[in-house]
Image (cartoon, rainbow, N blue to C red; front, side, top):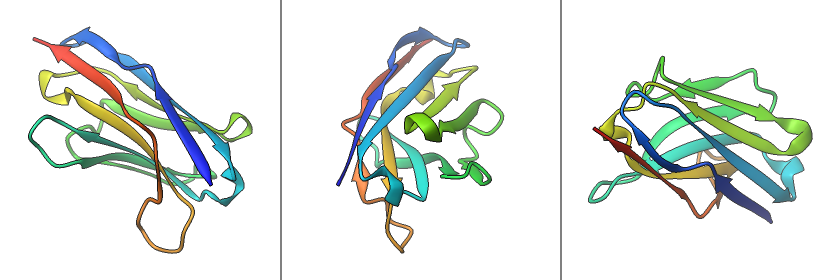
Length: 119
């Protein structure tokens, strides 16, 4: 099993920045891909960014390209999401996820951290 704990959410004005962190514990050696997702009120959860365990592969949703950066510290079993130029539409609960299986489905999820961007 893998446990994921997010931190770093909060309230920020439009144009500001936040850095989310995700700390993993347990069988982290099985993880090959990390991801960040978000869910706004009344909307479905959506993909934000992903990074491979090696860091050699990254992927972003079009809505955050050029503003968000995903990174990881394998030695510390942590993943980060640097969010710059935040917009009110970025307001959501942000979830860290990990994939240790053979499919594209993420099988471990954190509890989420709230990000609120005021206009």
